[in-house]
Length: 417
Image (cartoon, rainbow, N blue to C red; front, side, top):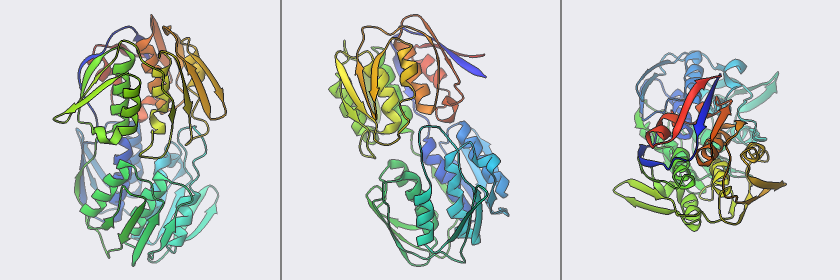
């Protein structure tokens, strides 16, 4: 098992390029199931979750060939409608194969999912939506079994905004008979990216990026080529890395409009953020100011940036209040940040962070994907050396982040424990 050794105190400077989005690539990979043929997906990040998805596709009979950041997926030979527990247990997004398998083959058997332990993320809204489209669904022995000769369009109003549910039903409805309307749909950029890919395949989807998505079902789809959008969470992590180290960096390949909520809060904290010719410059102030945040569904402040922003607030001037409104267990990084000397108190879904003059390096342990990033950020800002263990979480969502940070001047290396 690997760990990271971080020697803090270096101001990050230079330029870095953002990788493709994991959260966009995963559903796009799954959507290839909908039609036989060869798809070429580019700007794909090298990540554990991507490899897991490839294994799921290969287990179904697809042929996958990856060369660099370009992946060719041949779905012509898919001959199975079952995704087993051994493959699905490590990643929640695997459950998304249910709808496409059902749409293409009229039946599907998929294990209930696993993933990060950051709180309950039930798939009941996914299943309720598939039933509204005409699927017969049975839960048995830890598996979801679904069948339907052909799905039929329906009006579906989500009880809560759900990214996975919106993606899942958008894929399932692409070849359903008639019109499907998704109301209170999630609005994330990754959903827009998936809709663009499905439309490239021949789907008729309008309204992605708004809370109402209309899908006119088509009789069939065709394989397509597509370039995955940049990873906005990786980009946001680099933005905070510049701020927390007193640095000045330029970020290539990101879309700042995808991170408006984060950028506004960072600017409130005194950080200078400018965008020119597709390059975003982030320059830290002499002193970070304390700022309050509340996580919300997009376009609100992203829950996937809450842990990183908390690390920044640990060295801010004054106090900040951080409210987590998406996941109930997403303060597990707090106990580890305290080991750096942070001053944080938690009550329910609210954390109060009182900035300290300096963090102190410490041995810490990652609890989930975004918590891993927050500990790296704290280590970059701390005196002395920090050791971050259990970074296998990190490899699920960040491509070679230690190498990219080292390229900006950070003193960070990966070693075997």
